[in-house]
Length: 379
Image 1 (cartoon, rainbow, N blue to C red):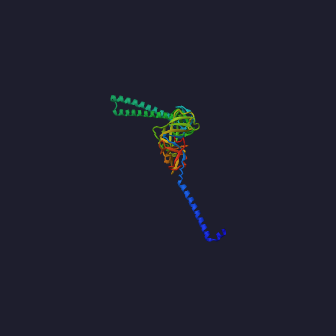
Image 2: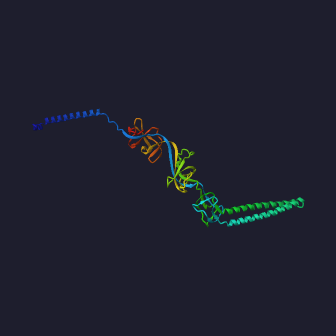
Image 3: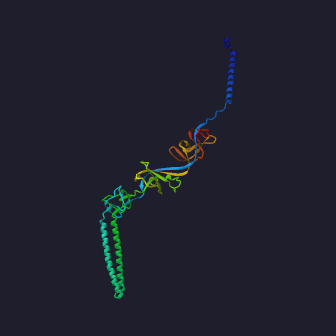
């Protein structure tokens, strides 16, 4: 029978057509059922990301400024002779302690002794002339009173007397100057101090004012720092300068408190920094001249927000943070960073008190995305 069906072409066509129709009807039923299930299914809820957030609160911006400098004497003088000559002796050596009035060096004084002797002789000669002129004036004055001489003779004698008096005065001044110059051949300490440098050796010819010995006062010390211009850009109040804590770099346990006494009005031409001098009261003995120290000052400023460094996000090259709104959605807010620290950032503008700022997972968030705060955070 099956062989008869294969040889009957009209019957075979009808069987194939019927099979196709049955398969088409089954496929339609299956597609309709699947479509009905898809239309009845609920849409999947969007994923809610878990984040950590903190509520920010303003705090007084304590700006800690630190710098490295060195200890220098507040009072330091370059001592030199007031006359020129050949240095024959320098008593003071570097590191020596000297007292006020102590002799530090001497120059050859033979020429100045000769000048003093010459000035002394000039005084004696002027005194002799004055004695003679005084006697002549007395004689001519007596003759004039008796009418034995003329008024012109007396006036000439009086002129000689006044000239002799002026010469004696000039000679006396010259004698005092020669005496002073002889005294200048010795260099004396102007105050109690320590010799920090020398500028000439025995046998050397020195000029007037040339530094021979440098003396510093050990009881008055300054910590001197070179501060960059940026440190003065946002200074809150220059009239209320803060105290500075000075500590030795070699031993930070040794500290002293100082006050800013001088700020250079002009930047250094080479370093473009400003020199700041901090006066140290009762400086420890370990803070010797030239010792390296660090200075720390707390500068008060406007209220700021302090955030962990992980909260910062980059938006078009500018700093921003994610803030959780009341609808539990995140929004990106640009902020102004006052300064960056080791593990945190100090924000000066862009946030308000009570804002919930995301501090973890900031790189996985999108604008207005729903989030859920970790339990215990954001309080």
